[in-house]
Length: 192
Length: 192
DNA sequence: CACCTACTTAGATTAATATCAAATTAGATA
DNA sequence: TATCTAATTTGATATTAATCTAAGTAGGTG
Figure 1 (cartoon, rainbow over the protein chains, first blue to last red):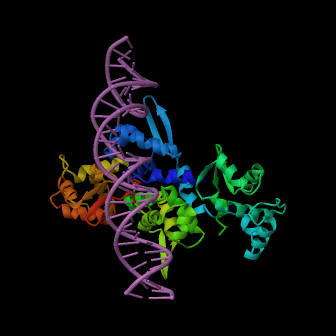
Figure 2 (figure 1 turned 180 degrees about the vertical axis):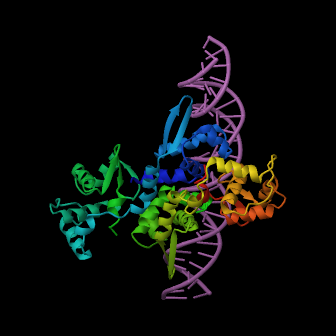
Figure 3 (figure 1 turned 90 degrees about the vertical axis):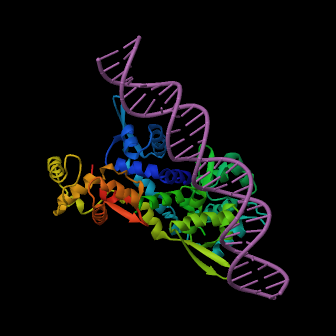
C-alpha cells in the first residue's frame, strides 16, 4: 500500500468518535441521526466523521427514501489494518539479491566514474539492481517528488534521465502517482 | 483492547514521519541521529516522534555508550493492528445468549417494576445478563464515566448501586481503569 | 576537569482538525 | 405547492499537534 494511504487510514482510526462509529457499524447498518443519538453528537459532526471514514474506503451506504444507511466495509478495514504488517516483506528480490558488500562495491566501481557519473547501464539484472539502489541513496524515503525534481536529481548520474526514471519504476524502486514519485518502501526493505 | 488505547495506537500511526520511522526500524535498530539524517529532520523531531511511538509500546531501546539504538516491537505492532478487527467477536456469550425478544421482554417484566426499579437480582446467569444489558442501555458506548457518575446512574435502578457496579464489571459489561468506567465494546457487540 | 556527542526539554510558530449553530440541499409526502 | 425529515455545507471556535531553534542533560573520553 502507498505510504500516504496508510497514513490517512490510521489517521481515520485515530479518533475516539470514529472508533465508536466503527464499533456501532460493526453491529449493522445505521443512519446518521441514529448514530448522532447513540453517540451524543450533532448530525453535522456525524457527517464530518463519516466523510473521513469514507475517504479511506471504510464506508458503504444505501439510500432508502430520505434516510441513508451507512455500513462498514469490513474488507477494507482488514486490508488497511494489515498493511502495516506486510510492509517490508518484499518477496522475490530476496532470492536474487544475495550480494555481498564486496560484490556491491565492485559493481559500483565498475559502473560509475570517480565523480559519480554512470558509465553505462548494466544488462544483468543483479547488477542493475545494485546500480539503481546506489542511485536512490540520495532520496528520502516517504518523500513525494514532482517529476521535475526527479529528473534534476537523476541528471547528476546521466544525461538520459528518462531512461533511469523508467528503470526505477519498472524495477519498482519507485512508484508514480499522477506525476509524483516516491520511493517504494515495499521493495526497499531488504536494502540496508 | 481498551477503546482509548486503540485510538492512541492509530493516532501514533497516523503521521507520515512516524510511518517512515517504522519503515526504517523494520530494517533493524537505528539510533536517533541516523534517523534524523535519513528522514531529513532535526533530532528533537525524532525524539518527539519516538516518544509518541513509545507511548503505545512500539519502541524497544538499547543503550550503547552515548548512543541509544531504537528498535521496533513487532509483537505490539501486530497486536495493535489486529485489535480493530477482533473487536466485536466476543466469544463465550454467544453460546448462552440465544434469547428471543419475547424471552427478554418477559425477564425485564419480571425483574423490574413499572417505574424501572430492579425488584431483585436474578441468580440464573442468563437472566442476569439480560438484566445487566437492560440497565446499561442509557450509557454511551465509548464514553468514560467517573465512578461517581456511574453510582448516580445505577441508583435509579436500586439503592445498592455498589453491587450492580460490581456485577457489571464481573460480567464484563464494563471495565474500570483508575476509577473510571467504560462500556466494554468487546463484550457488547453481540447485543443489538 | 574540560570537552564531545547524542539525546532531551522548553518555548514558539504554524497547520490541522473536532465540534457545533445556522443555513442549505435533496427527497418524499400530503 | 407547501411541508417534513435527513443529510450536508459553511463559518466560527477551540484544541491538538508537528516542527524548529536554543538551551540543557547525561554519559564517555581526552
